[in-house]
Length: 435
Image 1 (tube, one colour):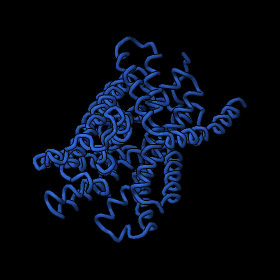
Image 2 (image 1 turned 45 degrees about the vertical axis):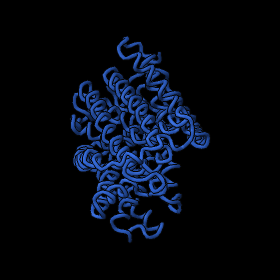
Image 3 (image 1 turned 30 degrees about the vertical axis):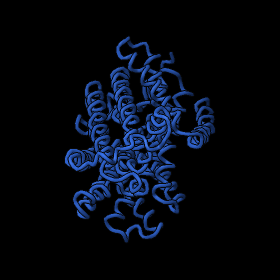
Image 4 (image 1 turned 60 degrees about the vertical axis):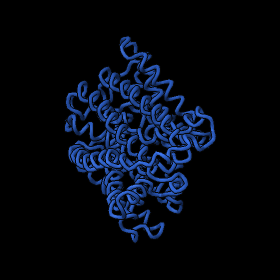
């Protein structure tokens, strides 16, 4: 096993502004973003059979959460998946995971920002009447959250708690209340796609996993969390369970409220469902909820993006500038670079429709994050830290590889290209360290 010191940012000496509720809000807020509001349309062709995918995805997510909880106790250091893999498999593997994870985060930031613009367009149509206006709306949200994160982690954490409460409670309420209005006929036939059930499960797992990505985020800023050995495991498991139940309930209810043919072409499936039950006012309320949800997710992912590059730079695998902290103890350079890259992606893709952009980045971002999930599970198996949780970690590893196989050749090819783009950076940093 490759042993190496923790990042140059010593977790024992950093300020720790994030407590249990802020850490849990970071998990829930990062998981509940755009996916819950757009997934019902993507899952509509599979009808009630999509519940098979949801069941597998939630079980896999909980196994991953349990594995990350174990890893956080064993290695309570900033960096999350990257830090665990580097300590088990060395610098090259660590860089690959850090690069893959970093790409998945800032590309996801771009997709969620565009989804925020779509939500605002449902409230104020003039804001997204043209592609330029829609892109501008997305970028305003992105840079407002960037500004909050630049002020400091404590302020970003407080915003995350408020945003999470404003979206989790209404989402749960919608799922529970709307359940009484479900038309069971919309669940018939059980599998309208005509594909075999194993094939449907494989396809829907990768789609539903997008809504569950973010379960590990409490492990990333470990050096900024109070009592990380206790707080991170609790926040990870509690946040995954809360977000998973709320998301599955809401998506399943929408499929039961809106006929499949209508749902397939809907750009706002949850708003469509609310409108059918309670009228246009409810649809507007759901649009507001979606805007709050996506805004909170952007804020959380910006925080995580900077912490990943901070940890990698502290170990000499990313450029040193990412490891610098300003007078507020904030990795400002990492925050700005991540937001700039997300901005470039939004501008480069603004002419696409919301659904096309969302689906394309969904598959790339999810594929990029499943690799760190698989590698982190393997890191626990290699750590030799005891037999507790080894069966769960093995199952989490199998699940991650299974989910990755459903991404399709195009998304996997793009993921490979982005991963290989990091090779020059790795070679350059090794040359710098050798000097």
